[in-house]
Length: 54
Image (tube, rainbow, N blue to C red):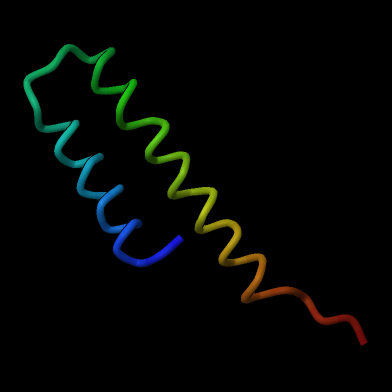
């Protein structure tokens, strides 16, 4: 995932939490977005910091 995409997803989470919506609608927007960011971070860590076996 590109840096700008991650930035937009993070801003979407912040905006969704700040909007005067019912909590269920906030969760419906923020949770999948946060999940996508966490999956991307996990994939990044897996690729960058693989344990090297000798």
